Amino acid sequence: MGATTRPKTRDVFALTDAMDVAAVVALFAKDARVVFGNGQPMVGVDEIRTGTAAFYDTIAGLHHEIVHEWNFGNDTIVELKVTYDRKDGQQVTIPCVTIFHADAQGKIDDYRVYFDVAPIYA
Image (tube, rainbow, N blue to C red; front, side):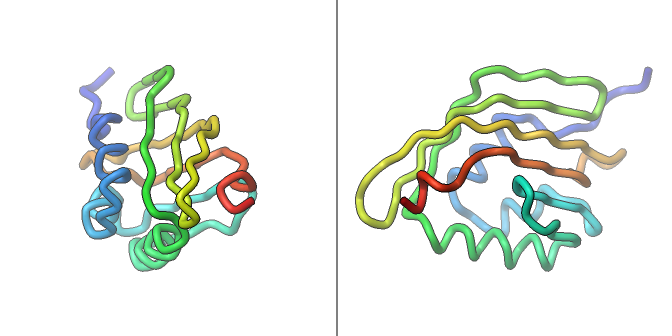
């Protein structure tokens, strides 16, 4: 088996938590695919940029806590507790699972997030 090229999970979520759209988008391959739950896929960095910015506009902040992580070659599965700072000043923590795959250049080309967003907007 060859060397893995996946990004470090802690780095992925540190950039996500910083809510820096450009830095988050830089993690992805040009033709990457991102899917949140049963939502429509965002394909390509332009859609990922637009979708990420739109999501960040709905929250005041967020913090990912890694509970468990499994790595298989260039695939990563992460169980998380994510704390969202809502725009009304309240916080809510929800469980989440994120799965991602990195291409040979270490860019994420497939990213899937499974969580219930209802508490964020309740």
